[in-house]
Image 1 (spheres, rainbow, N blue to C red):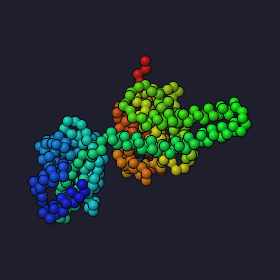
Image 2 (tube, rainbow, N blue to C red):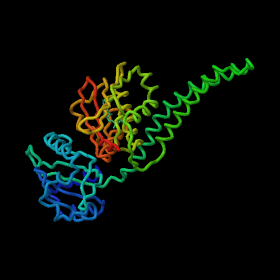
Image 3 (cartoon, protein in one colour):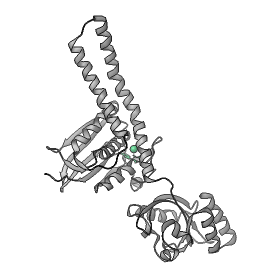
Image 4 (cartoon, rainbow, N blue to C red):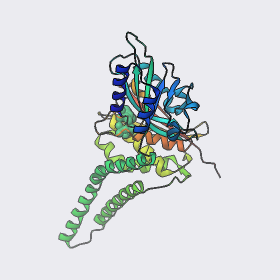
Length: 363
Ligand SMILES: Nc1ncnc2c1ncn2[C@@H]1O[C@H](COP(=O)(O)OP(=O)(O)O)[C@@H](O)[C@H]1O
Ligand SMILES: [Mg+2]
């Protein structure tokens, strides 16, 4: 994609103005939507193949503002980025992935490469060339990949969790073998260890299984505790204490417990990963304004202000082995549930993620 843009830019520079026919040929040959946008963000050219890609004909789009076709969640970010970037005169090519609304009202994920065109001696760009293609990964595909990666990540921790009870089981069997005697106390410990392995295996299977959304009345406290049974070991190893500040009764929300569990696990993992020193994570579960509410507050590295608007964008990660999909999935799941997710963070001071979900109707 970058190379098509480079080709166009080189021609623009040589020719000083490519004809619309040339753009149309590029658009059709490379199966891209090519548009030109004025510095005020108005479409001034749209390639003739637009209808096949976004449903809109060029006439539908010409004269209208580019950003009105973006998903509301992506609009500010793209707008801000355009403003930031157009006055940096060096590398004025930039590529972003975001959602575009099609004529039928549905959204597609697109990859857009924009280039700011300057004429001699001008500080402000005269126009923006924007090459767009639909991103081939389906949302569901991202979801599946993410799920696999969480399972993969957890697998290492789980292997560790299971090894301890197995070692103890083996030890007691050996003891009883050499004693030639059934020891009631040993048996009790063994049973406990087997239960522990069983519960870990159960959690793991639960998470790995593909599911449709299945809304039921669930207690936030119960969902949280089942996540903790998977992450307890990791918290302990990082010397992080989990502090629970729970409403006196169960807070019942209408949700798919597996999906909300996935959200909690991801937020808890991020919280743990943000802390490189011993400390605590505070979980608060309460009812607020007729909503069920859970917040996860860590004492970790925090999120610098300049990154805050990227939170929830796919592939944004600051971690060496991160995939930057976790939060996007969290946002998607919470949106699906008609809930809200907000983040408060200060660099060096820690982060709080708060989720609110509709309360389940009491019978
Ligand atoms: N609790 C947190 N504290 C600090 N930074 C966070 C926290 N949660 C998320 N982030 C930031 O958001 C980025 C994206 O998170 P996520 O989507 O879960 O992907 P990943 O964990 O794979 O990086 C992280 O790389 C990190 O920079
Ligand atoms: Mg993560």
